[in-house]
Amino acid sequence: MELHYPGKRTVRAILDNTPICDLYGEISAKNRLIKGENSTVLQKLREDYTNKIDLIYIDPPFSTNTTFTIGEKRVSTISMSNDDDVAYIDTLKGFAFIEFIRERLIIARELLSDAGSIYVHSDYKMGHYIKIIMDEVFGIENFRNDITRIKCNPKNFYRKAYGNIKDMLLFYSKTNDVIWNDPKVPFNEHDKEKLFKKIDKNGRAYTTIPLHAPGETKNGATSGLFKGLKPPKGRHWRCDPRELEALDAAGLIEWSSNGNPRKILYADERDGKKMQDIWEFKDYQYPDYPTEKNIDLLKIIISASSNEESMVMDFFCGSGTTLVAAQELHRNWIGIDKSEQAIKTTKKRLNTLEKTFFSHYEYSYLEAKNDI
Image 1 (cartoon, rainbow, N blue to C red):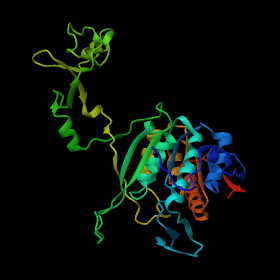
Image 2: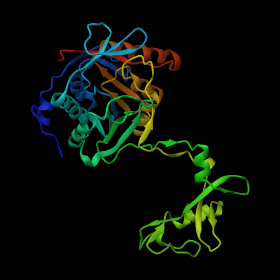
Image 3: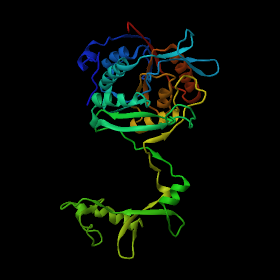
Image 4: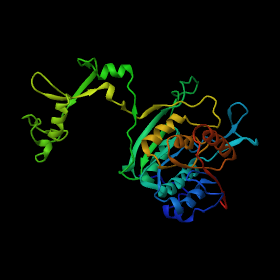
């Protein structure tokens, strides 16, 4: 499934004909902050980073037809501005906006490793078009999640529609062999009372789960005997009966009155419950930069979809939240933005991070020349 519209270029034309910039600056570190037009910079990075980026997160323009500025005390949005404090201009609309995003995603895919993932932050107006573009570029089989992010408190306005308190993240991988660290959310007291209803003789809360799973195996260890029992018809043991014997010896199997074994799970040994696809990471009320995202949101994404020493990229890096989160989580990173205000804000945050947390932390600053 794909979109057809005027001005849509072929993948080959994009990869072969998008201009390549030159990068100037001293390259002394793996971490790189680059000022330049991102399509030409991405083309340049293909020389050294093809198939090497494990995670890309971008929060691109949303086609809002707005100029975003940085005020003295808070961020403001205006339709036109000649102010030197312009952060970025978001005026592309319709087919031009869709093709703008698509071209950059096509080049970015070349940089992703086979274990890599990409998250694209969007809103309810353009996100569904971007979903179709990402199906085309990355393959619908590599679509993993449409994540809803609660961004603000409920609104009360007079438009004839429901209030909008969410935006969306589209999560795709390059292949099925993807880095995934399965993030968890800590149990709260209500979770513990609901999920771990039993109490053992030492006062520890626990629950039990079956030792067998759906699907019959006619051969192999998981169809064998455990304590003289075979798994129920149409099912198999979840692990080798020798492992079940070890669990039983450790007191981690509970036997019912009719001889049915179940595995014991203690609440104090569990690292939480699986994270779901609705997240509440609200925007900052007074951000340093327009549309600055909550750093905890970026830390979840980076922790889930990359490993330590992975290379993380954000080619609409804005205020540098992705880069700061990656650094704090011991990832390598590349950030790209063409906005003078974005680079200024990012440098300030990175320099503060260096002084506060990292005695030997450094990054290279590069500027693109001969870009469009």
